[in-house]
Image (tube, rainbow, N blue to C red; front, side, top):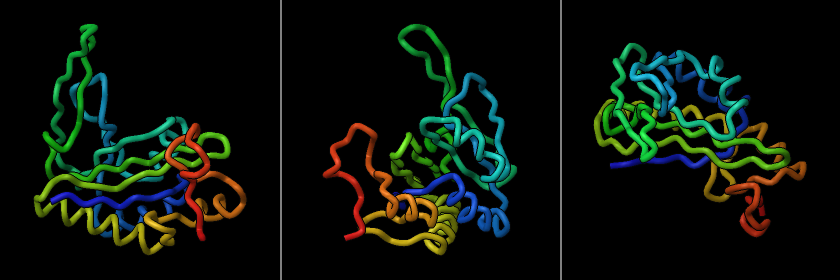
Length: 172
């Protein structure tokens, strides 16, 4: 039983809408891939702000605070080793994909879970509830307040910066 909330959000939108979740249920965020086998979780969306802004796109595994995270070792064809912190090893989790801002383009993000477990479903419902409270539905996306201002001022909210404008989100 998977669930997903498709969204357009700036870093500020994410901080404003997801910080209340942390007051109700302390959580931790962990990058889904790492060169290290042990996780270095971050305990607030605000603390992730600089990492989100620096990245072209960000993927985070979110669990309740204090949960021990498990990594899956991945060896590339070139022999490099990295570690994946994913839902297959951490089923009581939610995935947060932040999307990205590239010039005058904002790409979509997503809050989702592929787990049917009660912990993952509960966490997903909490994230969905708080994000929806501070965003507006535009077609099939939930758009944060700052992202909505960007849309109305001519920014492209679209799947990627090279996509044809026919794929841009429109309010009409």
